[in-house]
Image (cartoon, rainbow, N blue to C red):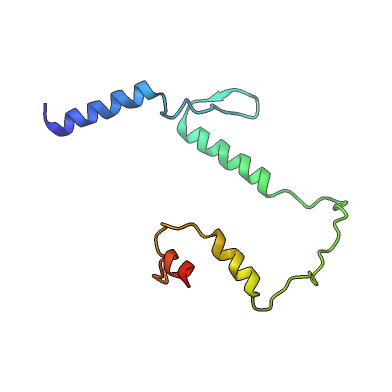
Length: 110
């Protein structure tokens, strides 16, 4: 047996023993509740299901939903020294540098 075949056999055996493989899929049923086994019929049933689901007409009495407020109290000014200090304390050391290539330790030492 070649090395590649042995590795494949090991992988398959491990997968079976671990039980982490995909379980059996749920059967597709017709509108009458009968199990559909033909792949093409299953696809057609899914198409039919989603057409019914997504192409419904709007309800006659829509729900009474209040309009969202647009004047939310959000501070968009520059951060305070206290906010920056708190953020710096929350950064964990030993992590990889962000896209700016500045290591966390260099930021904390300043």
